[in-house]
Image (cartoon, rainbow, N blue to C red; front, side, top):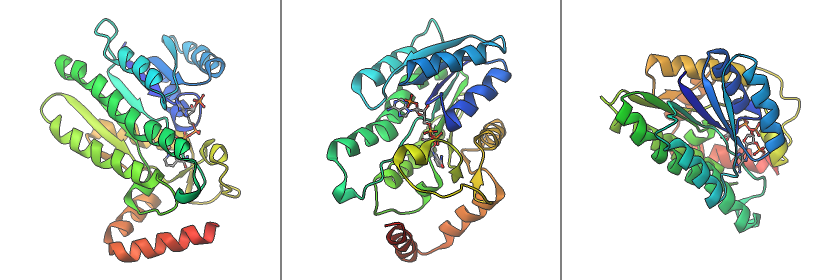
Amino acid sequence: MPTALITGATAGIGAAFAARLARDGRDLVLVARDGDRLEAAAARHREHGVSAQVLVADLATVEGRARVADRLADPAAPVDLLVNNAGATQRRPFLEADPALLQGQHDLNVTAVLQLTRAALPGMVQRGRGAVVNVASMLGFATGSRSTYTAEKAWVTVFTEGIAATLAGTGVRALVLCPGFVRTEFHERAGLDVGARRGLMWLDAERVVEECLADLARGKVVSVPSPQYKAFATLIDLLPRPLLRRLMAAVERGRR
Ligand SMILES: NC(=O)c1ccc[n+]([C@@H]2O[C@H](COP(=O)([O-])OP(=O)(O)OC[C@H]3O[C@@H](n4cnc5c(N)ncnc54)[C@H](OP(=O)(O)O)[C@@H]3O)[C@@H](O)[C@H]2O)c1
C-alpha cells in the first residue's frame, strides 16, 4: 500500500488526515512528540487493516527533524505522500516574546517544512509519483505585526508554489493547504481566547481534509477549503496592501 507520513498526526488537522488516509487503505507513519498519544492513534488506524508506524520527534529540534528526514529518504520503505502539518504559534507580541520560543516556532513552522520536503522529494521524483501537502494558513495571505506566525505561513505558501512549478512533468505534486479557523487544539495550546468557536468561519478538521485531498486529486496547487474562505482570500487579494496592513493592525490592537 502507498505510505503517507503525517507530522502532527495526533490532533486536529493531522489526526483528520491520518484517519481519512487510513480509511483509504494507506499505510501510515505518524509523527508527533507525545509517544503515548501516537501509539493510541496508531492502534485506532490499524483497525482499518493498514500498518501504522510511530515516530516520536520534536520537529523544533535538529535531532527530531533528522529522524523524520532519514525515514522519508529511506529507499527500502518509500513514502508517497508527505503531509507537513505540525505547526504552532505563541501568543505574545514579537517584542515581548521569548527569543528561544520564537526560534523554536520558526524551526517547526519553516525549517521542518523545508528539510522534510527536501528529504522526501528526490525519492518521489525518482519513482515518478508522490505528493507533498504543506499546511499553511489563510493568515499567510495577510500581514501580521503581532507574531512571526503570519510570515512563516506566507513562506510555506510561496515555497510550495515554487516547488510545485519545479515538479512539473515529474509525476510528483505539491499542494499548500490554507485553512481559516479550524476547531482543533491549536488556539488552546497557544493560550489564545477565541470564544465559542461557532459560526460560519469555524470549520471542522475533517471537512478541511476532505476538500484538501479533493483539490490534490484535481491537481490544484493552493487549497482554500470552504466557499466563505475562498471569498475571503479573494477579498484579501483585492485589498491594497497598505489598507490590509492597517486593517490587520486594528484587528491585532483589538485583541490586546
Ligand atoms: N486550527 C486552526 O485554526 C488552523 C488554521 C490555519 C492553519 N492551521 C495550521 O494547521 C496545522 C495543524 O494545526 P492544528 O490546528 O491541527 O493543531 P493542533 O490541534 O494543535 O495539533 C498540532 C499537532 O502537531 C503536533 N506538534 C506540535 N508541535 C510539534 C513539534 N514541535 N514537533 C512535532 N509535532 C508537533 C502535536 O502533537 P504533540 O504535541 O504530541 O507534538 C499535534 O499532533 C498547523 O500547521 C497550523 O498552523 C491551523
